[in-house]
Structures are given as structure tokens and as C-alpha cells.
Length: 356
Image (cartoon, rainbow, N blue to C red; front, side):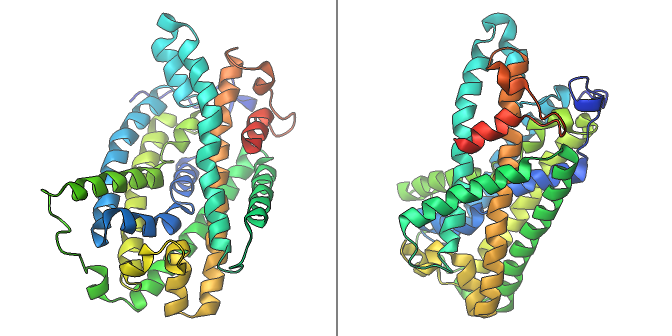
């Protein structure tokens, strides 16, 4: 992989500010977030039992295949915008600005849609404290959280790097508490109570379940490329981006497996088959409640809510750089090329994606 100089004339003061550790924390915050807390039961339902472990393992292998491509591209073309940058370099001479132009418009839609799942997860876990929350109340709370994230992003990149580490630590505490609570009252007979025919390769239902499990797995691993979207602000991108991607995927795989095994060792997987049950809607809170008590469940649920905010924070941070880079190349509205006069971040990218 080629390593370019750590000075970029397009950056304020020509400096890159994100090192390896902040890059890993941004990736992992975006990858994990509230995803596994809401998809562990979904994985069980789709795959039909604890064989859901396969979904996490194979999902990581698939993510690693794609992640290595991102590592190569991010190291070789370390500019803001990620996919936009790569399409421009690969096809610019043959198709002009067509493919980069189309990508920016799709990115303006799919990035906010992916981030909205973090908000949905936030509201879903909030029902642990507010079981009778109405749909309208949930929507209003979700909108308020989005604007909170925008306010958090309204600062210079050095502050964001520090804030991302704080949010990452909170994410690890919430995950660590869940895993620790689960293994203090762990029952192997529950965690490995595979139904009959769970691994019957000749049964079409196994492969359909596996396809659904991989879909969920990839959703939960998405975000390993966040550092590549911020490559223009990463120190020594030729070294930092590949390491941040590989370390993030392997770290998240270990976390997801521990979470899945631990949860199933406390909560009988049959309880998760009912989408209206607490075991389906907020399984982490159920685990804490049944092991360490309601007070611990409440505290960790708050940490999970913060973790959900962290994932949206990291996603909008990386996504906001896509229209910024396109506008500099004059394939998107010129306003998106402007940065905040004091903090030097793309204001229109953050505002527009937050609004969407």
C-alpha cells in the first residue's frame, strides 16, 4: 500500500489530526453502536436458534474481505469522501463525473437511512423505562436525539476525536457490563441448546436462515470503513487506515460472539421468538435485570442509549465528508464545499444529512 505525506493542502493548516487509536474508536463506535443490542434476538428468530453464532463468524469473514479492499483504497487515495473518491479516480476519465455524481446523490439518502436505525434502536431501548411510549412520543424523541448529535458534531476535528474516544469507552462499558453479567449466571445448556436439524446442510431452511443471518451480520459490521471516509484527516493513512479496519473487525467479532453466547446463557432463546416480549425488544436489559437486578439494568440501559447516540455520531461524521468532497470537484452544490469559519468542518454536509 502506498503511503502519502501526512500533509494535505485541502485541510485547514495542512494537518491531519486523527491517529490510529481515534480511528479504531470511530470505526468500532459506528460498527457496534446499538446494533447488536437489537439484532441478537432478530438473528435468533431468522436462524431458528443458537446456530446464530455462525452469522457473526461468517459475517466477520465477509466484512474482512470488503474491509481489505477499503484498506487498500483508503491508504492509496487518502482523501475525504471514501467511495466518491475511488469512483472519481477509477472512472473519471471514461465517464467524466457521472458515477461520482450518482454516488453522491445515493449517499445523501442511504447514509441517513442507515443512521436512522441507530435512532430506532435508541427509542426501542427507551421503552425499558417507558413501556407505554406512544409512536408520536418516540418519533419526537428520535428527532431530538438527531439534533443533539448535530450539536455534538458542531466542533473542530480535534475535539471530535477526543469525544469519539469518550463515547467508545462508554460503549465498551455497556458491552462489558452485559457480558460480565451474563457470565456470572451462565448456563451452558441454554447457550448451546440447538434445535433438531440446526446444522442440516441439506435443508433449504438452513440456507435461507444463513442468508438472513449474514444480512444482519453485515449490517452489524458496517462501519469498519468510517476511517476511510475521513482519510483526508487521518495521520499516516497508509499505515493507520488498514490497521484501523482490520483491528476493528476482529475486535467487534470477539465482542459480538461473547455477547451472543452470554445472552443465550441467561435468556432461553425461545423467549425471543415473540416480537412483543421484553426479551426481543430489550434483551440486554432483561439479562441485567435477571442477573444483577433492576438497578443495574437501568444503569446499563442508559449506557446503551448513549452507545446508540455514539453510532449515529460516528456515521454522520464520516458521511458528511462525501458531499463536501464532491462539491470541491464541482459535481455537487457549491455550498457543500464551504467549511465552518472557525472549526473548519463541512457545515452543509452535517446539517443536510442530519435533517434527512
